[in-house]
Image 1 (cartoon, helix red, strand yellow):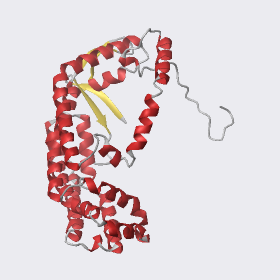
Image 2 (cartoon, rainbow, N blue to C red):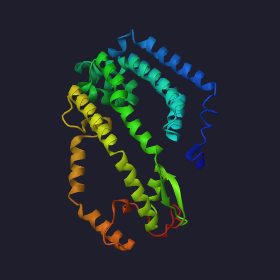
Image 3 (spheres, one colour):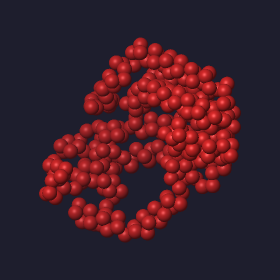
Image 4 (cartoon, helix red, strand yellow):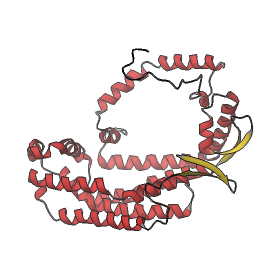
Length: 328
């Protein structure tokens, strides 16, 4: 459950994160990060010197069992990483939270770089042995995971090159996105509220108000939203261009044939299926045109504004038929 209030003119969002840690100074945070590091390098030190798991399916099964335990128990950043990611979503402009999260990310990135030998090693299993591995009964529960690694293998680089790409991801992607998100989160505007009064709201609240069923509230929020975006349009342009340039470099290094191929690969879907879906949807744009035309008439406007697209209309009942009911 989250709540928001006003303190010193600033809007704060509070979540109950007690299921993870009591607060930012909880001593368990440092202990758990030490445990993440211990478990991670326990796996690394055990398997990195070995090559038998790349030749014998039975040994790979043992290695994957260990890898699954590591991923399930902690991964590269454990609960502290999740906790401070949530905290930075609560306050995207806190220097202290940024510093704590960056420290965890730094260790996490080092662990990911040091453990990637395992993934890359499986990717380089010779073609003549792959069927043997996939046919081994003990690897059945990991078969799809292994198949995905094999599918990605032609696009993976060497361990040193992959390390470089991981290290540059912050400066070429993450930092840019966080910067713009931080600028937007800091913005506030005076808007019309649902009760008819005017009040100062933060960017995230303004976005929510654009879904209001009250046209005056919606228009007020839409105007404030556009004003904020216009203020930061130059920064957003630089961010987007840098992110796209970074992706272009990565795609060229990995020999991806199209900009969206890496996403299809990670989503485990064929590009032909996506293209078919796009053709099917774009070939029937008359359906959403008819829908928004009807919605415009219901809202009593000749043409909807962009911020009207998600506006609420009508009332949603709070009673639903139970499973097995004959009533519709």
